[in-house]
Image (cartoon, rainbow, N blue to C red; front, side, top):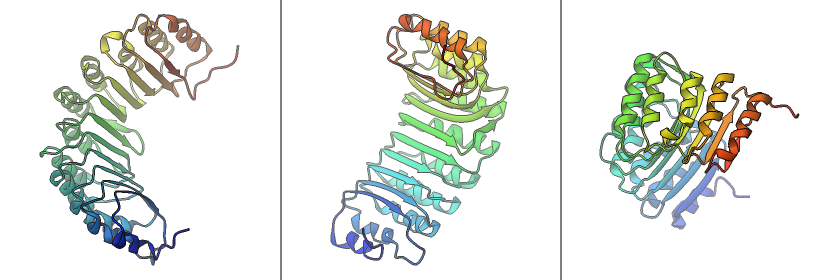
Length: 303
């Protein structure tokens, strides 16, 4: 087992290309991330999880120097607004950073706005995951999320707050317009509780054939969501974690018929009963390309 007090010397004596670390040491232990700038010319992949917020902040300050980083995955970092400029600098300065995952960040509106504006500058990010965002407001949904959703060059976007969040009708409209404007996005994951304007988001997803993978978590009008399974929506992979009415389940089963695009369908916590499962099963022979159907956390009983 590696002594936490010896770990910083590893950064000094060895050039590291890929680093995966769970930093759960005490506050008194030396922080290895102070040595990260020494690895700026070789470190290409960094995956880290944290227990001590102070170490996260020290890592944030070191990020802009890591100009050869291709993949960055940070879990439990707990960053607040003051860390956002450092992440923004990494995004705008790097010419190789293609994948960024931030798990459990505490950005407020100012921090998320700084982060979102950086995505409007020239960058090379392809995959962006911001999950378990603990603070959220409708103002952030209105002004920051659309900027992130329309970030040029992104092919995969995951925006999952810690708990699904209410979007106003105006926020849904802004998000729908941003999705329509993004021509590069092909994978989208959203977590929200939508209100009156959700049809704007659903309609843009339906009309956007370039977005072939959709993952939605929250509460959506069931019939709007069921429409995404239709072959005319050109979706290859759909994961839904949202309650569906019996009518919506029947619509999903009907939309599976002769669908020549859909390959994977997951309906989680969709309140599907045994009758609904039978309807879906009966549609399987006509779902020409479907190879995976998942129904976890439903009320299906053996018959």
